[in-house]
Length: 442
Image (cartoon, rainbow, N blue to C red; front, side):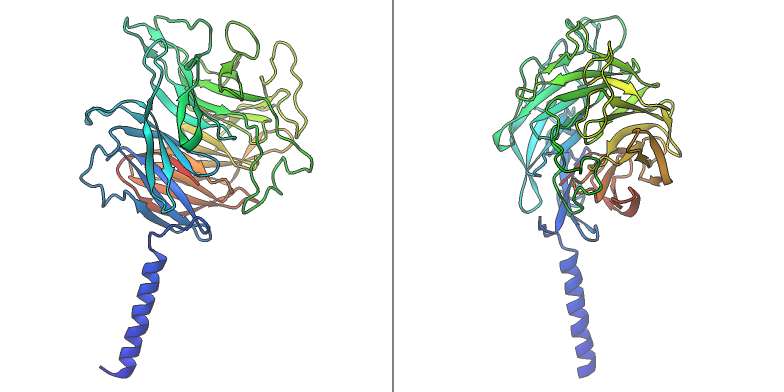
C-alpha cells in the first residue's frame, strides 16, 4: 500500500469516526432538546435527542430495533403526554391493555434522566371513578407545573345509563408524584345528571396561564406580554370542550388545591357556544384569548376572555357573562385553509401564532393571531404535511421546534419554527415504534 493511499485511508477513517460521533445517541442538555413519545405498539416510552442548532434527531431509548418483539413494556397503552416546565418529569395517561395481564388505566410519572432516557416514578395512579369509571382523553398541565387536567369522555354506568363527561385533576408533588385532588372528577353540573343518551362529551381541556414564559433562546421581545412591568394574572380558568353539545365550559381553578369551582355560583358551570363538533381548545399564552377547533366545519372559534388579561385591553364582563367568560371575536368562527378535520390546537409560547392538527388531511395549519383583535389568518403556505394520521403535537418552550406523532406511519414529524414569522420548515421524519400517540418536548 502506498503512503499516499494509506494517508487517504486514515483521513477517511477519521471522517467516518467523526460522523459516528455526530450521529451518536449522547444527550447533552446544554446543546440538545429531548422529544418524549408514547407508542402503543410495544406499550412504551421512547426518547429522541435533537440538536438545538440544526434539529438533527437521534434515537436514545426504546428504539424500534430494541423493542421489536415487545408488547407490554408498560403494561398499558400510553396516550396523551406532557412534560413539566423544568423538563424534569413527564406524565402519560396509560389505558388498560387486554394483552397485558394486570394493566390498568391511570397516570404514570416518568423521570427524565441525564442520559435522555426515562424511568417510571412510583406506581400507576388510577382515576377516581366518580359516577362511573373514567374514560380519559387528552391531558394538559397548567403553566406553573402544579396540576394535571384530564378531559373525561361521556360513558355509561352499570345500569347502562349515560354519565356525562367530566374533568379529572391531579396535583403534582415532590419527586414528580401525582395525587388526584379532592372532589375529582368535576362535572359541569351539581349534581351531575345521568340521562338516557350520550351527552356532555368532554374531549379537550386548556388552562389559562398564571406565569409568563421564561426567557429562552429567542427571549420574549416578540411576545404580547413583553412590555416592562407587566405581571401575570393570579386567577386561573379551565376551559373544557363538549364535542357533542357544541359548547365550551368554564371552570375556575383554585390555584392552591387544584379544585375546580363554578365562577358563576349557579347549578351548572357557564358554557359558551362553539361551531359544530368542537375537538380541541387552546388558551393564548397571556390569558386574553381562547381558540376552539370545530372538526365538522373546518373552522376555528375565537374568543376574548372577559377581564382576562392585565397585558392588553380586556373585554368587560357584561351580565350574564361571568369573569373569565368568553366573548366571540368579530368574524368568528374563522375558516381554515387547506386542512381537514381539525383536532388539537396550540398557541405558540409567545402568543403570536396558532397551529392546528389536520386529522383527516395529514397536515398542520399555521395561522397568525392579530395582536389587536385576536382574529386568526392563514400564513403562506397555509399548511405543512405530516405523516399518516397525525395524533398529537408539542412545541418546545423556546418556540423553535414543533413535533407531531403519526399514528399510522410509525413516525414522528419535526419542524423548525421561525419565531419572527411563525413559519414551519419541514425537517426529516424519524421512525418510532408502532402507533405513536402522545408527544412531549423539553
